[in-house]
Image (cartoon, rainbow, N blue to C red; front, side, top):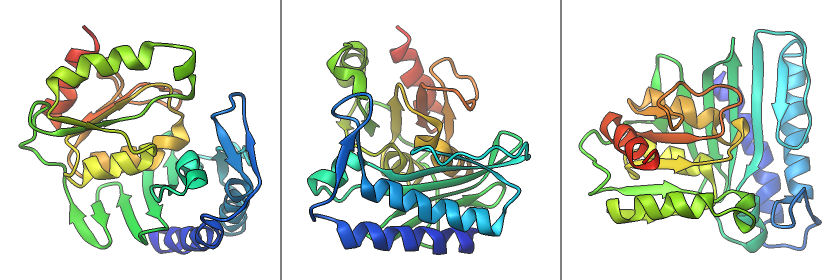
Length: 253
């Protein structure tokens, strides 16, 4: 399964690299800063076509709307280009996120960074891997001595909520990073590079693969209340057990 997923991601990744830092068609969604490109749509079509051919009975949930409901126990969750704004501006942190859910639980997860040709993959019960090497969250990290990653929702121009949360974490953290791609951030937590992550107003396709990568790397990923993430969860906190707990403690003050 993971080999299939890797081959699909590579094909979509080649399309993205062929068009990176070139003139492409750009549009916006409900907000002017929420961008979508022809590359997003073509990448999604590649992935959806591959899945539909290989597993025609499976359901599909994809960011750009290529959804298919077959009343199946299996559902593919696709973000064809996480970090579109980065991609448009020539910043190389962008990723393809692909996950297979069974009965609303992630069974396989893959995040591919085409610019670096890096794969992060996980299978339930089998661990998480970066380019074939087993990875783990860093169990020794605390909020105070680690790097915490976050992102700002597209609504940040209309709401101060994300800034208020940022201001709660900043005095407590060793450092804060904002890469613009949640899928990538979760991979860095799973790899023990970032100690933790939090964000609001995320969609399932942003984090579907990352959820399994974190869990299989020995980490904890929940909502702000410590509850298991559901299909409709929008708040995310991740890290080792103590970082997850402490971040939630700060965010919920």
